[in-house]
Amino acid sequence: MAIENLQGTERRGNLAVLAPRRERLAIVSTYDKLCGVAAYTRALERQLADIFDVTVFDLDQDLLRSRHPRVSRLADRHIKEICTSLAEFDVVNLQLEFGILGRETRDIRRRLTWLANAAPRLSVTFHTVKRPMGFPYGDFLRRAAALKFRIAADILVAFRRNQRLSSGVARLLHHVQQRKPVSIIVHNRRDASDFRHVFGFERVFDHPLAFHSAEAAETAIVQATRRRFPLLDQLPADAVLVGVFGFLNDYKGFGTAIRSLYHLPKTHHLLIFGGIHPNEIAAHQPIHPYLMSLLDDAHVDARLGKTQGQRSGRAGGGSPNDLSARLHFMGAPEDDDFLAGMAICDAVVFPYLEVGQSASGPISQALELNRRIIASRTRTFLEFAAYHPGTVEFFDIGNHLELAARILARPQYEATAREPGRYSVETNKAMYLAANSAASTAKPRFRRDTERASAGQREAG
Image (cartoon, rainbow, N blue to C red):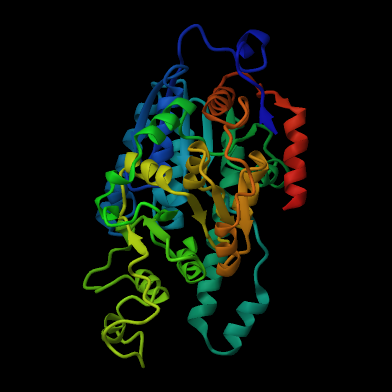
């Protein structure tokens, strides 16, 4: 489904009508530059500035993620100070990734309860949706019978955490909505269905992540050149650039992209825009294990692997399969360089594993930049493609041979500008206006033709 063109929608009454004055909207979120939720919040702040009087409350991650008892008390005080300020606003939107409220489940639930109770009206944007699950008795009993009590205990702890952050959070918000309007905002239809049918909410709004207007995206494309990146100065003019984006983490599947290089011509180069997340930096660790695995996939510097005891049996001096000349680590760029990096790539690849993500910011930005997108067939990306049919080329998770074939083949879809009125910054604004309005259940209207196209895309997937 795609939201109808917004011109004149307020006059026709399709959306919640703007109040005589701009209502005051508080967005509670992390604002850290190194966080995906923060990047979306910064984009949302720009988008909503002309329909709300927006103030962002930055959740201090140094306080909130600490396990030290004294710092934890300071974190609670930090949340209570925000709660005191929320009384001055008409409506509050919480950009919720559970980890930004704390590491421990009890801390997350306690702080979420305070924020929800303090909001005059509330909308919660879920960046991850936990689903209720049955207890894995078989696995638990097998571990216990094998006297692996620590693993069995971990299974129990993980189950309880999931229950408290799925059904437990739903019960909390049901209790809150007995006293005030509560809207749920999610980034795919599967999550929306869960909130409506599993958790029983009525005010549920779904929209894919949207960051940049067409004009801003065009500006980023025009300003992007290879010269912007000194690390690429030595590349030949005919080099074909394949990019992957995001912090280095197992679930990103970047190893699949590296292995695909063995089946691509030597003119093809892989650019990795992203580094180790600051939360993953460990004291006295010579190299992060996942980074080491990527170097191993590329057979980079066999002597380093031998030193670390991870590549036994190789002679020193490198490997004939060394891909170091075609593999480029571009670091963790600022927002503008992140977009420029996408814009210079001939193909943008998302080789992620299935980990139950609700959405991906980078794939939304790649679409806005009108890049060729090749993605693994995860539920996240299939849900994304349902909103944007005819934009994503898929390959099976981990199949580096299929990925290489996709890259070499002609593009499956023409790189034409998206049709006006599809899911975009403008439709995202309309959705946030409806979700945060005092009106009961006013929702944007949807076009039937695009709804049918989206349904066809899902069936094809």
